[in-house]
Length: 108
Image (cartoon, rainbow, N blue to C red; front, top):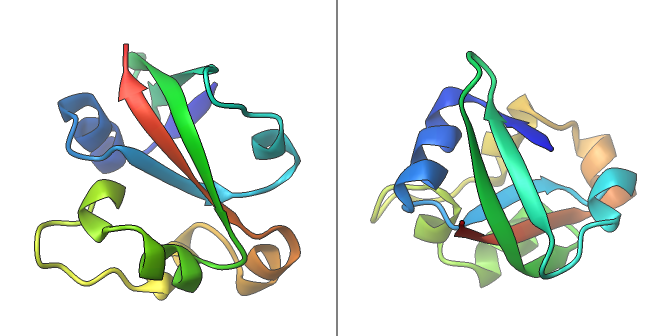
């Protein structure tokens, strides 16, 4: 189970965001390809289910953004992904401690 803010929830539900970005912390280290994740909307009782297709593990959001097209991570076409965008969710210390993961999803 994972919670999502309204905007990323809507993008995953619409199929326009296929990679969810998280710290590669203890909880995320347990995720494997083939697992099912239930995403709940932070401002309601809505939920969607997705299958994990792959995990993309990197030491930082900078490295992740250099390797994965930003549109797959929920950015608009042509929009530049900025690692500082993730600082509203995670500190630089957490990023350095755990690394990051792009969880590639397929809606069920």
